[in-house]
Length: 118
Image 1 (cartoon, rainbow, N blue to C red):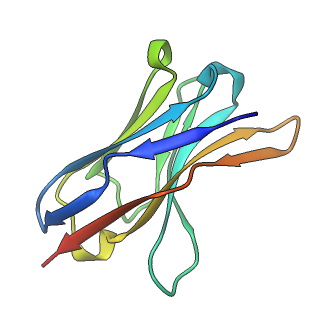
Image 2: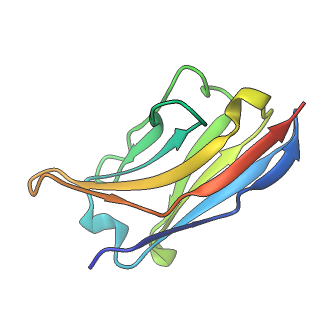
């Protein structure tokens, strides 16, 4: 059974930084992509960033480009999201996601709260 466990959320002032971590129960190379999504109160979950595990291709939502960085550590079966220059509109629950495309499988962590005060 796949488990994804996020950590690193918290309360930070605007302009500050946080680093989120996502620990997978198995090798992240067993997934096609690893990524981050977020859901703000009263809004739909939105995509933030994706990393393809084979090619290492990285893509970001326009709203976070230049401020957020996704990375991985294969040895630790972990994916990270470094968030800099945080804005109040970045406030949301952040979820780690892993996909196995051939199996049409989507895996989610439990989420970690990020709150940015103005």
